Length: 107
Image (cartoon, rainbow, N blue to C red):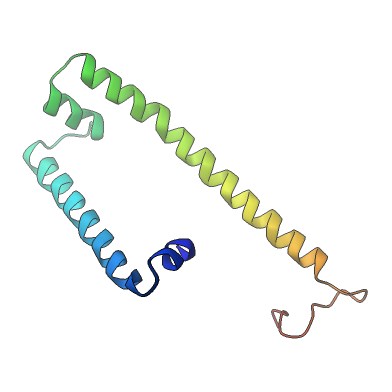
């Protein structure tokens, strides 16, 4: 989020609110559609209702099932990189007694 804040500068609150509005419309659509077609089938059931049974529904369902694990893998790699970076930072910035420089200590 910090990179976005740097790119938009003083307009960050406006960009944040615009994103929230888009997500709000998306959520509202999902709720309305799920109320119209109640089912325990999830997103794939919505694809079937929207496009009907066929190749399009099958392809989009396959893409969804292939994408979900990839999102989890990328999130896990990001977490590992954050933890490794934090550990490396601690190793590089401690003195011989194991103390952090002034102002960088957690205590």
